[in-house]
Image 1 (cartoon, rainbow, N blue to C red):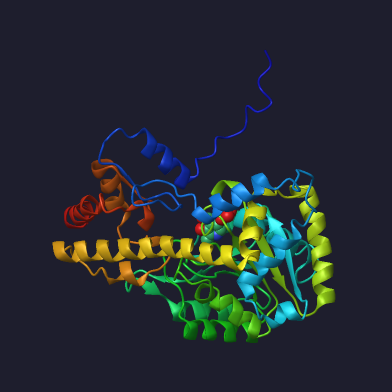
Image 2 (cartoon, rainbow, N blue to C red):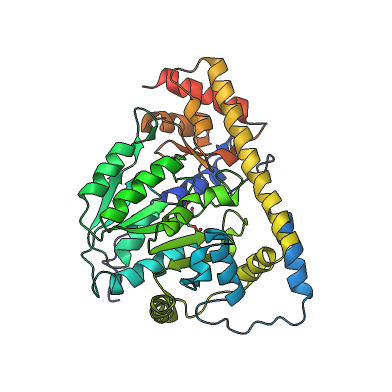
Length: 412
Ligand SMILES: Cc1ncc(COP(=O)(O)O)c(C=O)c1O
């Protein structure tokens, strides 16, 4: 038999976070804990279908006017409008001026990808693959690859995390903004920075925006955790809204995976803010071309759930309550973990655990300590030391805290 035409295809390494979950599933130790997964868990360690989502799913199932016809290429109009409204605010002047456009996407990843494809074709001169794209160090692992796969050739990093002080390296970040070639693209985490859980303060955002404006740098916000960081949709959208108020043209990739718990429905939106309605319409017409050859048109179920919820004042309030339930549980786990580590006298300072926000915390554990946690303690976390606070429960907190204590004291 002739050799396979795929014989020369090299095996690609597995995606780290999915591999971690697979290893966790196979582990038969009863003490095992998964702090790797990027999803919300209840205090029983279970996934949570938001009560408002269950209710709206029933409403959709009972609505005989709905069918399974194709959606328009750019998506469900009421979903797109409401998604952009929660990013930019009810009284956004940009919305009033009709200079906001939206593209329904397959999750936040799809929004990033459509945005990246568009920029590669049309930003700063057409077919421009040489424009530098800057991502934070560290960042969500997919940022690099999404922009690379869209054709960008010059992906760079900007300073973000200061390991020594376990906080934002503002000066490093501002220096990188000053040094970047004009018109470079900057991927900014709108809130709840993944993986560090460390966001700029409003004052720091103002400094960032001032340099970006002066140097003509393009902000591409990634908003995957609106509501999760502080429990408030408004606070978590502060940076995006501030940039809009400063007159920036920008993109904002929104994910509804986490704040609606709709991970597998793939619900996202790309909000485009331009200078005027005419510009935005032309941009959307090009995005329509990109979507047509990518997924042709998006799925409807998740978008219907989100649109129905956001459009009804009563359901909207219920949803905000559900988001707050999740955010509050994360906050509780943060303070419980910190107080346990401090009570144990674990070397180092642990205030960063409560100062960081969102789902993730950058513990500061080094790769060897992480390996000890995984191999000896059956506690699964990313090699970077990132933990998902939702993996903690009132039942496993003591065990996790003692294990971190052991890892830090035994392994340097
Ligand atoms: C920073 C960041 N951006 C985007 C995403 C992608 O979200 P989605 O699952 O909706 O594609 C994630 C998911 O983990 C994320 O953490």
